[in-house]
Amino acid sequence: MATTGSNLKLIHVKTACEACRVRELCLPTSLTEADISLVDELVVRREPLEKGDYLYRTGDDFRGLYAVQYGAIKTYGLTLQGREQVTGFHLAGEVLGLDAIDQEVHPCNAIALEKTEVCQLPFDKLEQLTQSLPGLSHNLSRVMSREILREQHVLMMLGGTTAEQRIVRFILNLQKRMAQREIMGHSFRFCMSRQDISNYLGLALETVSRQFTHLQEKQIIDIQNRHITILQPEALQKLAD
Picture 1 (cartoon, one colour):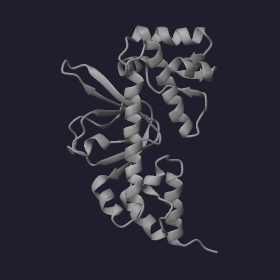
Picture 2 (cartoon, one colour; picture 1 turned 90 degrees about the vertical axis):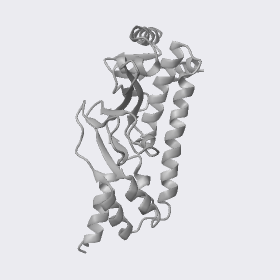
Picture 3 (cartoon, helix red, strand yellow; picture 1 turned 180 degrees about the vertical axis):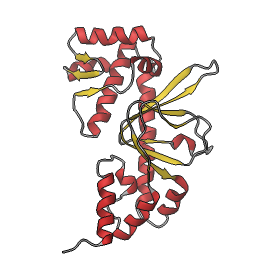
Picture 4 (cartoon, one colour; picture 1 turned 45 degrees about the horizontal axis):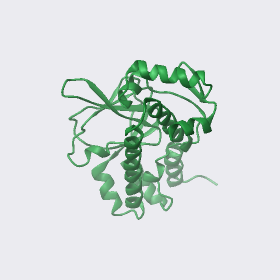
């Protein structure tokens, strides 16, 4: 039996989004083939970013949310003294741009740490679409709530902790986010530099390097360049508490 044009479109969109962990934002399970056509018109699939390319800069107009399909994005701002302050690392399956909804301008810079691909979801069209597609509004709220919860976890990770605890919790946080994408388990690659990690955690670069070396000497982790393997998950978790 020949495949109809509408079926081809359905297959095309699902294939493009099947590896994306935020696909429920664009493709709720209740979508019909007619709904798929509306979503296909909404999602803007941008050209891949190379390492060092900016997704957006501070002060850019807010045009929509961005879902990371693969790769990694670093967000950062500048202090009053002009120094860079890293505010987050965004991995595949995570959403950027939520902090720009209120003022309609981006309050920080977003730069690719490696080759990265994102889908852009124009917010005005997204809001309009939620009125006609049941379930899409709920899924959007879920994605927003998930990102807020992730930010809360970061604050808990940094608050009232030793340097060792910050490093350990950072490792565990990355490992958990990787595992949610069903990638790599206890072995994964740091997409960010140690300088970025030290900036993000509020620690000196020397302190970060010393803590990594200490954990490696205790054979709790193994690090080869930027590739890390958690050798003793229970011991690492104990240090985080």
